[in-house]
Image (tube, rainbow, N blue to C red; front, side):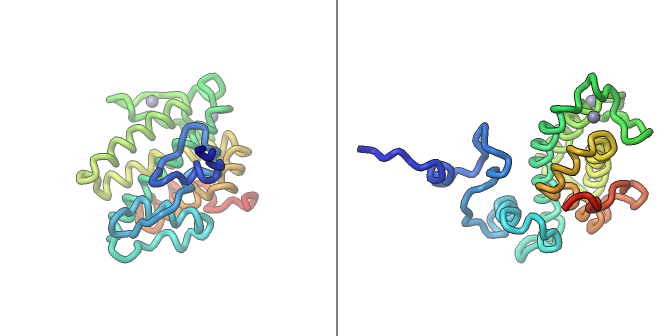
Length: 208
Ligand SMILES: [Zn+2]
Ligand SMILES: [Zn+2]
């Protein structure tokens, strides 16, 4: 008679490397790896994140066999995946009604996801900007440093909005993931954002 697999066995079923609907956040990306940097930069980065998520220094240098631009590309792709989860969590309290305009403190940002830039709700801006970034990243060959810079500038505002207007969500998420810390360290390492645009501390003193 067939044995019913334990949940942990089902979770690690052979070869599956995607998060099933309903997977708890802390279990996301929890599969086994045979990845090497050369055959899959994305899987290799995800494997590093499983064990070294909070040791950002160890995540940033390109591993052997990957050049620095390819490694930056893998990081940006992974940040967009995690930002998708992040934005859906933020949406619980950042609604079109609550935040009808995208802003951080008093600065309002136009959304570039509409052909010509126009005002958008904060959650609309976040979703549209993330979609736009994912579309750009899917055209890997045409992704240049200039694209990365404008992508980082736009994505940064998502964090800035959450930091200034939903601080408890920001701190809870940052404590659990260090996603902003990784994003900003990457932006600094690759000079993707001028210092004047970096308006949130790398690791806020209340996060730990
Ligand atoms: Zn909001
Ligand atoms: Zn929009």
